[in-house]
Length: 287
Image (cartoon, rainbow, N blue to C red):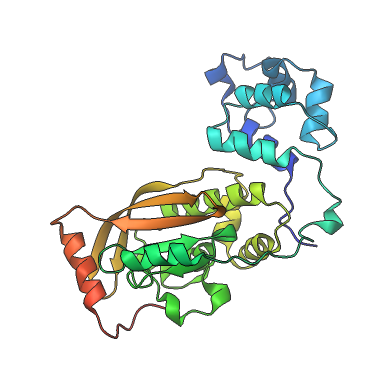
């Protein structure tokens, strides 16, 4: 059976375990707590619902949960905006586990107009299009060279999560690898919440659970944080260290896709090295 079924139970347990009762003004109690974080009855009290109802929600036995109740639970658990969205996505009634991920993978096609945008930036801005399950669907010349040699990879390996956790070059390329790994897992979990039955997402998650202990460790924290912008360091084997800013732009007509760009301040050493990367005629890049 595929593991990637979305479980509200695991998510809610992880989120209440992450809270310190003292931070919420709750007493430690006469008896020592057997588990970390909040008890079910404390979450129910903070949310203003009965303990029985909250227990049924956490166990996945509540067939229909109103928005107001979800909002109350989100407030009680101090959920972030991304976590609230994720909770809403997984709170709908699930099909039986045997049917998990039974929905065939839908084709992911990048529109010609978006490919034109990639080409227009090809000389100066590394850019990629990321689809469901963090598949890398399209790129310009610099985007295909900034870290991994995308042209040299098989189509089913052109996936951000698979590369970060399974490619042996990933830790050398990303000196801040742990932060990168947490970012990737947060993005992948958010995507799985939006598309819980998508076959490609299930394939990626299950392969990583089977082959990467680090992925399993981070995935099981139930962290949901969709990172759409920030900075990162890349230790490129041919042009040296790149300190870039990345921005992700959701495509309005293709909401499952995001255009990701990498830039550096004008006149910076990274900008010079990006130009150098583009000038390489036949680079032997990391596969």
